[in-house]
Length: 276
Length: 327
Image 1: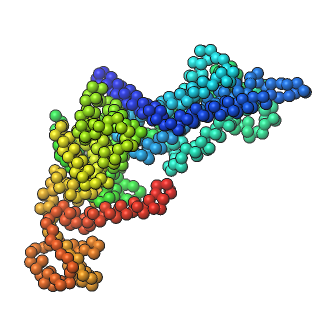
Image 2: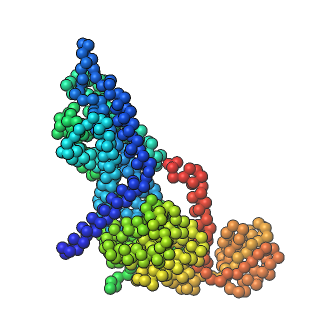
Image 3: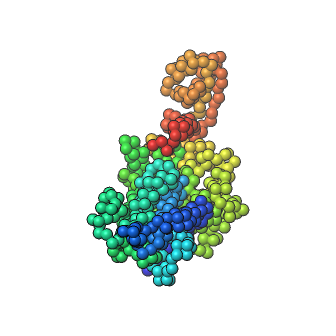
């Protein structure tokens, strides 16, 4: 193949990728329900649950008030709400894979001269963009959570949010590819999103001053094990590192787990997609 | 100019479990032809089309689109293809224009050409006024037209249409064929269309009759009629005993279709003797000129229309049981 033909081909793939990405974004903008969810969810979690539980977020030892973490509950919860909003949106856009399949649009793309990898990447990047946007919506509530962050924190946080969104959209596509009959998004919400979220030390901390063995004395062992196995635990930990400079685990673990999730889930999604 | 046939199919086979959906199918489609694949539902038309679109791998055989092997270079083969699937494949949350723009981008049509083509194709199918409308607002006939326009936005020289007129009213069907004729005036276009509407294939250059995954005949409509067509005598007997008697006496030429008996006419003398014998005991009788309908009947021993209706009923039955979501 000549150099110019190769250039044309890359230009075509980039254009096709852009078209698939743009379609995802346009569809999301036109879906009012999704947007309303993206706005209401953080309001509920931050303003009601966060502020409501704020005074109870402390322990008393020998009559002395003792804070497990040097942070308020809203501050602790805030990064997790970002992750929750990203998770809902990522999975929701991945579920559109099912609609594309059922309503035939997938075929239109499959018979086009676009390679499968580019089609999948465009789809996942589109979902990632929308999820990142919904995550960023939560940032508007930062002042209610008494959060002050530098531009550097913000940039680091957005980078991590992108990785979370990419990894979760890929995971959503992997799950969607395995589903033959579709009962609606509610099933996803109850079976995938909420369990992952509640088992990620998102709404309660594991005391970081305790060892893993000590934690297992305070909490039931099964609960601690599930939390430690959940990759989202480390994703949220990484977000906390960026926004409130607090880690329950090794600071390097979060980004490493996120990159691994993104790569592995995308690879599985691609393998499934090529086979389909 | 490429001299190879538009489509070359060589011994394509495909098996689904124990059913042989395609059994060594072999034929070529010449450039510029309108080629009809005619057969009852389940004959293998759609399977064959999916193989040619490169979304289904056959178990054996080779197929070339525009000289490009669909198995070895699927991306290359898809470049010259325009496809209109049986089920609509538009994004109904995008506008008419956005659907076409999307298509142009994924087929790598450069911007200036894309703009021009989209305008031309919208004019071709008379949807200019609906440019900015969401696709969900269109009628099913308009959606079909939009899909044809979309399949022509890139440099497609071969157009596949899978049952393009199914579910459309007679007027929309006629218009759709008119658009296809107009498109062929605009560029060199080979059209391959599957259908079970026999009246639509009369104007095609070639008709390929397929049943049970095998090609039964492949020729110009006139040649098919001359070779396989017969005059048909359609009789509605007064009662069941007469019907049984007729079928028993003419087992070699008679086929029962509902209350009707269709007899292949061996000659004019037959009609006279038939009338003399049963004339008072039949309710209705008509003689039919050789038609593609009779070609199909004599090749498959079945009537196309009944087959199609049967399949439709099966689909309704399936839907009543809860359809796709019960599995």
